[in-house]
Image 1: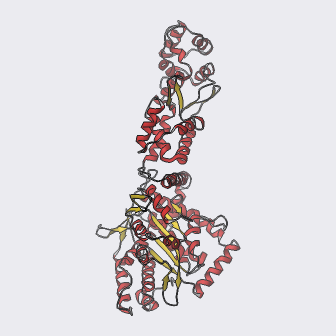
Image 2: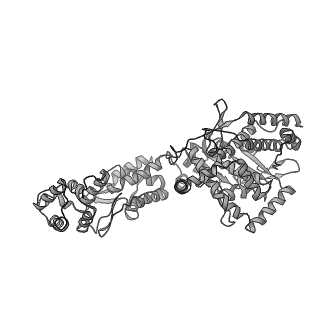
Image 3: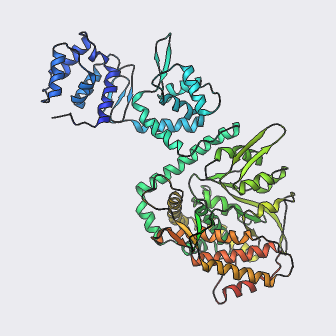
Length: 605
């Protein structure tokens, strides 16, 4: 049997292992440990007929010096285990390698333990964030060094002065990721050499997205939350790829906006289904894929902010929060992206602005169910407007300054308004709030008789558990599809090379539909002043484009034309939103009928 063709990294690991537990093997003078190993391990076993093994055997027999590197290359795993059992250091040292594990007491395992090392590093990052990263990075980059040197290096990586005495002790005592080495007079610190590749692997994943400067305690604490959310998404995607990839692709080949509409109408009826269609479509939009013209010029991107507003008790929170995040109490499964939606219940706008710098170069969605409350504070419109434009935020009070930093995430918000017989009135006192509304795709909730009937029916069905079975069957498949499309469109390393990112084509059909809708609205508008901006057309295009991403697996092309059903739904949204913004100043149903002529259309409000 020959052991001369072992992988290079396995030989290297054996060398580290033997030098830690049995440095006596290469001492120049005779010693009891080497003699004992020769007698028990080498003499009692059949000799391996290889030149290297015979050379090592001969030198040990003659009490001549021998290199651990040579021993590592020629022994068997069972011989290695026997040798470690004879180590006088086995009660003090451990070893966690890719191929071998040694617990205290010399308990030898013929398997690696990098999974537990990776888990420990992830736990450090979740618990200590950027400070944990800085200390681990410093330890990885040195062989061994005094604490002061490591603290200085960690501070350079962190970007500010830190003194990680408690943290390095925690790495030693809780996670076994650092050791004290050297003498009592000159103590030093080191990371066990065999675990460094596993640590570097996790740190490299952490470094894929730039680590932002964190200038407030709130931002530092939020960064820990971000790490946990990113880990949640990564674990979900990994599990999907490993166990459900083929099923997800097959589901996607038959999935479309019409499929989602049918599912939601079956759950909630022909009126309130549209609220859920908007919130799920916004989940597809978060990837912010490019929209291109038929001539291949960039026309925009699909990402949009969403607002459901209107009277209390009309299902806004259920649509934007419970359906997306799930609600165990109601038995409602999550339909939204895992680890991407940040629920902001109870958060103040000042807190949001402070934590926003932790989200630089990252793309999340902030779900805010009491958006009115954010405008009880003066001066909030301008920073929130910049946030919705994904611009650069700087906020200053008498006591502190936040920013500048660039915000790149999205919002899904609810707020209450006073709904009138015609139109509505915002209850937010800030006169500039319309600048916020203008930067969102907005949907008014008016409690009509038809809507009341559907809401009451769906609530009864939920209480009886009749909707949950339908959701449990569809929601996981929908969520898998959404997750996979998001991962592909954001170039996640786990899918790069397997799938290609696709763009959405802004079709002439979509443009013609919007142009005709706009002309009809202006033709029938009673007032001379137009009370909605051209941004509304762009929101309709973004909505249709996001819905069209549902057809990712329906085409082999690297561009997805806007789906016909998605275009019609977006055009209907455009007309109704223009109608609301115009204080219902044109005949809604007349415009709808003329736009779609004999085609059926849904009444959205």
